[in-house]
Every structure is written in C-alpha cells, then in structure tokens.
Length: 242
Image (cartoon, rainbow, N blue to C red; front, side, top):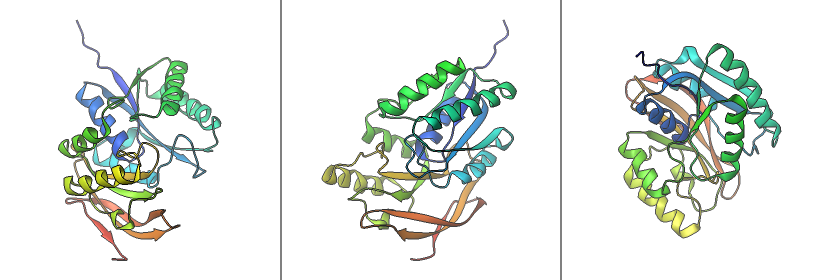
C-alpha cells in the first residue's frame, strides 16, 4: 500500500495562533500544500485583524515554504470578505491541491461557523488544533512549544503600552494573565484585544529581526509601526523610541 500524505492549506496571519496551528498540522503528519495570508483593506474586519501580515513572507521563507505562500487582498467587509476568501482559495486549490484547511481559532463561534462553511464549499476538512483549549494553559503551552512572539497592537483597556514589542516569555505572560483577570479581557486575545507576531518557531530555520516604533492611538489603543524586518540568526526587536 502506498501512503499518501494528507495535504493542508494553512491560513497564516503571522500571529501566535495561526503559526501554532500550522506547526501542529505538520506534527499530525500533514504536508503543507499552500500557505495563505489575508490582508483586509479595512481595519474593522470581523474575520481578519492582523497587522504585519506582509511579514508572513519572511516566516514562509524561514520555513522553506516561500514558493507556496500567497498574500491575498480582500475588502474586509462583513460577510463579503468570506466569499472573497473562498474565491481565492478555490483558485489556489486548482494548482496547490489540498484536502484540509488549517486555522488557529480558540473560541470565536462567529469565525468557526464561517470557516466551517468555507471548508464545506471547498470540499475539504477543517483542522483547528487549539479550538476549545483553556486559554491560560494554551498561552503557557505556546511558550513551552517555543513559539516566540511579540504584541504588535493593543485595543483594550488594561494592557499598558510597555508590552508592545517585547518578547513574551513566561514572566511577561504571568503579568498579562494577572491583567486579564483584573480588567476582564481574554487572556489569549481571542476577542481581538491584542494582536501578535511570531519572530521564531520550531520550523523556522532563521528568526526575524525587526525595528519598530510605538504609537499611541487613543487612551488605551497602541500599535507598532514597522520600520524594517529581515531574517537573522538571533531574532531581536529594536524599539527606536525607547
């Protein structure tokens, strides 16, 4: 009998959740057929809220998968963006066939329902390895799994600007969880309270070095402005306003 590996197309935003999901798909024996990163044209997209999405090309290159990486633009308009993604994935599937769509959702029923419908229309399975996990255990599990990430955007009260751009280790994570208990935001940011970007992970052959600037948008909203990014041996973040 000839074993045919399962082929997966992984949705990669550059953040902790989608990066972890891609890694777990490989752990489960999937062959990565394509990586799709989505750039919404609106900042209030219901499905895709990721800054630094352009840097997924560096992540794909680091994993040796740049030839199967696609960065697609969508409107970001509610519901319309899902149909747009379907059309793009349908076209990609013709040249990079896959039987499974990989996502990194934790608790959003809104997103899960739409991804389930999307997978059904594409006639593929849906793989979401962290769905329903305890968010605190999940966050510590990311650290143990050697997913190294930074916070790139904060949109909730309770997370200070000092947390922008620093590498999240277990000490930083403990502080974030204490803040989540005090102020009521989701400890894994599933409600969009913060966005992240992965600068190193087990499948990365090189890390990512970036230079950024911290911006204050409102009383409790902050974001990183990217100045430059490149692959490097030891991933570092340079904050030019520190």
